[in-house]
Length: 106
Image (cartoon, rainbow, N blue to C red; front, top):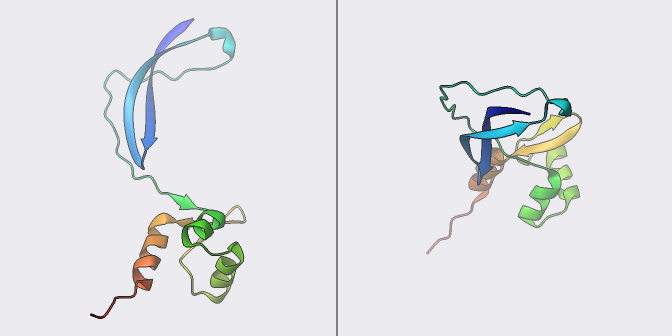
């Protein structure tokens, strides 16, 4: 058994928290651990959240077909095609929602 230090990352509420954890790895497991360096300097990266059409449809209480119509007409939020699948960046969805906000007149 080999004891190694690892850099691990937890993602909670979109915040990445790095920490080092001591773990024991069985040599016979076939795993080849990559030990953490002695000096750990956390790298803060932004985590990009993507939504599927199903998730966005639930968020807006619309059908997935409605989102397909918005994409087809070019009037919906910006989207990505990754591996033939549609994904929406949360930041793009929030930007679209802000632009679509209608102010009230008092």
